[in-house]
Length: 185
Image (tube, rainbow, N blue to C red; front, top):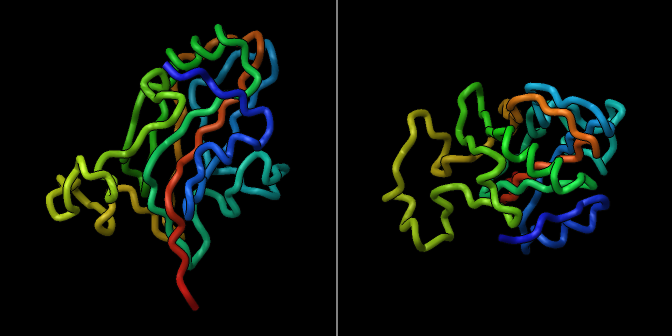
């Protein structure tokens, strides 16, 4: 098992960004000794609402500005300065999901998301999955990518689970890695 990454600063970004890739991220932070909430809705508080680019890179609440879209290829779960026992308890009790236009497109217990990240199914450049024409289709798929988020389309990630008191506090950073689709004007 790969060791957990301490992402107290933004130096983690070079570890997951490949050439041409883009990250969407949003910190979840609670002070030491706090009991976590049952549910957190991520990507809903953009930059400017008492948040800066070290906490999120969303410029709009739950959507991407026009004319841009995003092809989500993988999800990563980073943990800041949490005690190892708090981190593992949190990972065991919580689930992370991706919602696009009120439809859940992906869900996984945090304990099942490896520290190096998890590739979404049916990634175009993974030979294991074959050609896009052979991919299983989901009802209401948008574009040929099962995890394509068009501009101005509502999306969010949800963190849900059984509340737990974390002595070291909560510092959790989910990130989606993929490709930003920007129109040439």
